[in-house]
Image (cartoon, rainbow, N blue to C red):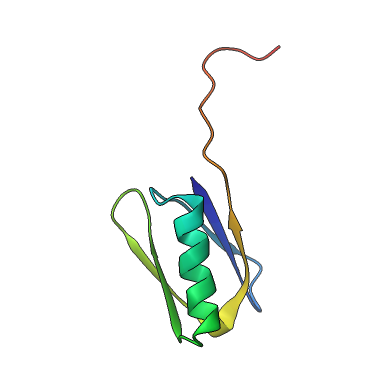
Length: 74
């Protein structure tokens, strides 16, 4: 599942594939915001950990799992 994080005052975004479910990512982000945590920690499918300051979050886009298509599209 793809996760995209927009950061304030930056034209770029952080994008990565995660093995967590959309509900788990949403819960983690919501808890970090609700508890006024200073950092948000998420991990990708390669084992890397991303630590983002909660104050810098502009948006978090959580993509749904999609099966990859095989073949040609006409």
